[in-house]
Amino acid sequence: MNKDDFVKGRGAQMNAHNPFDKNHLVKEHWEGIDEEDLSLQAKTEYIEVFPKTIVNKVDSEDLRFGYSMNPYQGCEHGCLYCYARNTHNYWGYSSGAEFEQKILVKKNAAKLLEETFQQKSWVPEPIMFSGNTDCYQPAERKFGITRQMLEICLKYKNPVSMITKNSLIERDLDLLEELNRFNLVNVSITLTSLDEDLRRLLEPRTASAQRKLRTIETLAGKQIPVNVMMAPIIPGLNSHEIFALAKEVSERGASALNYTIVRLNGTIGEVFLDWIRKTFPDRADKVIHQIEECHGGKLNDSRFGVRMRGEGNTAQMISQMVKVARQKFFEGRSMKQLDCSIFVRNKKGQLPLF
Image 1: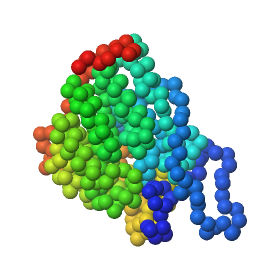
Image 2: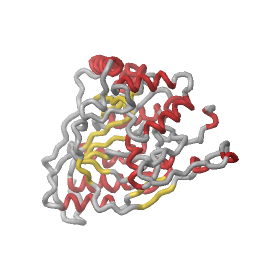
Image 3: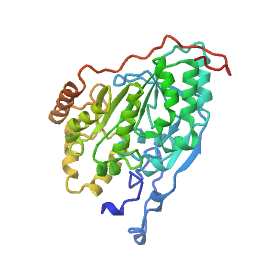
């Protein structure tokens, strides 16, 4: 398959079977074998859902935050490696193209967040935007739910961490600056590669590499703490960029650099393998074998403490390169702790006092 034949603007080039479905649609007649799969070209559909809660307790030894909130499920960014793809199976959709096409929108998220803060049982603690899908994905430009939730966090002075790979976060600089004035916010920008050709293939609807670098520079210029996530590092695709990327983001003002090694859990492995064999047929086997080498011969390792860093020679080499890059480009820098001591349980409708 030639790169030019890809469904434009999409990452996954297939719909993986949902393991929860009893039936599996296939092309039964030979006449349809070479027909184009029109479902891959479907326009993005926004589907309103009505959750009863929005703040999720995170029980993971690998993560540094205790709570997360996700205004959207599914993500139009189309990142091939995204661990969140599997969550779409629980909604009855595929982790492949449908993850990018069917975006579940929680319009009542800000209301639910305020109800959480109103509860006497709520003990102020940093909450992560978003532990699952990107809170600044293209849907946010249309619905503005993330901004509404940030306004609630500022009103109650509850600290937040944010992670995104979209420059749309700059729209909310006014709120971020005000939160930062009270030491209530930090931001992580995910930057997978400086190679724009690779970025377009890996994560087609994210901001460009240069645009992400400008966002890092803008946030850091406002004294907002910025951590850069090189996530995931994929051996044989972007692992050679560690030093160049670390140097670049350091010069843009980033305070820290972190990483994860790719792991292809659940049906994501099926989506990724289909993609890489079509996109990089000359080195697909090498990349696949190196990923497996990091996870004990499999595409994924679910063990806490190991799954995000991997093990074996390749994983150790990557770990050492990141360590040296931090020493060289981030000496004396760190992310500060957020302040949980100034939380105010306002009455509904009360304006924030600045």
